[in-house]
Length: 255
Image 1 (cartoon, one colour):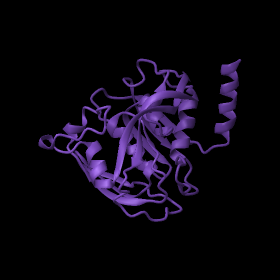
Image 2 (cartoon, rainbow, N blue to C red):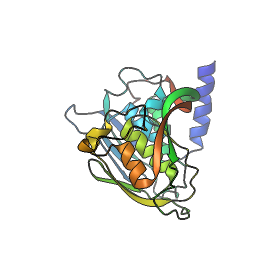
Image 3 (tube, rainbow, N blue to C red):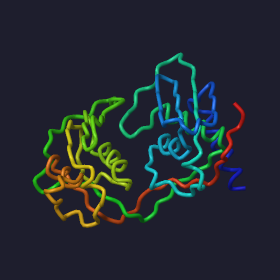
């Protein structure tokens, strides 16, 4: 009964949400490379796993995804999906998913029978906080609409942000560290920054983040954030919202 109720509730919710008009899903070429391309209401992916698609659609890091079948990150799909283009995508406000993400959620529920729920669990994480000296960047008022590509990585160990919030920075750091980072800075507004670090020096991810990096190996990401941005990451355990997969099917329904 619970599953039936969830399916019915999802069907109602997605019927009221924007959805792709046409979507083709096919198995990927094993030699293909992972790619995702977005333009307006069109999205095309190659060699993407369902784990990749779920984490992107729900804007959640993979370490917060539970109930994963063992094939979730190994079976790959090519997807081409289009929606009516009568109107341009609605502007994205801070903290809101894009319409493409909402449409991908609907696609996963319809074609892969994805059913999920959210829980709060006590997990290891990093808290992003401000150092005693304060931030080393200038905060400005957040725009009504956030940019589509506020971050760029021109090379390994280099990250550039344009009009980003502390919450957005925390999400990007989660990707770099493969561990959840929560914004606990209390900072309001947006800022620009350039960050440089030695990638190999960050691989250890020490639990004692107060230990400075060995200068002979270059600055770790932890040290670079503190020295260049006036922020720091503290290792903690805290209640974290996670996404739990209740049901998902490996083979999609027919195109």
